[in-house]
Image (tube, rainbow, N blue to C red):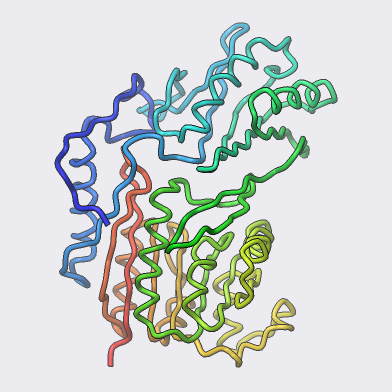
Length: 382
């Protein structure tokens, strides 16, 4: 946990004020963070009056996932981002928010694209980067044309030269030259956890803050006294794996087939045996646990064998659906991770009818923007 220190640290970028990806560029970091704390504190005030635990971000080189358009001007290609007015795009020459493994490769990649005799640049419209703190980078190049052997040959040579993995995508076509994933290793709660992260799957964008989020969730889990954990929206097992140490059994659900595939891989990679992952939407999970529907995907899962003491939810920006909200109202403890404080506050209006908020935190995953992650820990009222 970090306190807000008025160090007046200001990251500079020549595109501040024109590039639309960083809207809080006029404030130093302490001011940005204070503004977010104020916003979340006001929203949570009806439910929680203590000071938030505040977890800050590195000021620069914090984002491990980035997407750039490709702007064609004559024979030249440049990276581009949407402009501040959200009308059109601007070409960019720097981007201090991406982590170092991306920064070290993205400009060399652009040089090679521009030096190519049309093979790499022709109808290229975007480039996506997925990187790890352990210096793995996956580059996905997106095209408005079918990719051929000539493209694969040049891209394969680039893989070796840039020490990265490269994929190509076009309509109904995916070309994987080596792998379509990177392998991240995070030091969490005194242990190293290994995560396979796929190009098309969801990952937390800020690795440093992600670790702080997981460890905050662990601190809450330690207060529950064990039992079994139910997790909805588990993704690739980001929270699931480290939290499993503090529960007897874990049932984790996720709608994305690719994320469940990664979660099962990650469970095996980390030698964890007390987690069951199931591909289900949160609404389906609710119906199954309440006995309203029978699902073939649960034919090997004995739901009656679980004694859930705690539920962890990490929903999308829309927040919880009504069924899930009703289901978790029966849980002794709730850990709620939110990417939208407005919908978190809305959901708390219902959840605090049965529970009280005993801890709350803010996680600054997205410096220089209005976006903010938050978390609350709730205990069922006596």
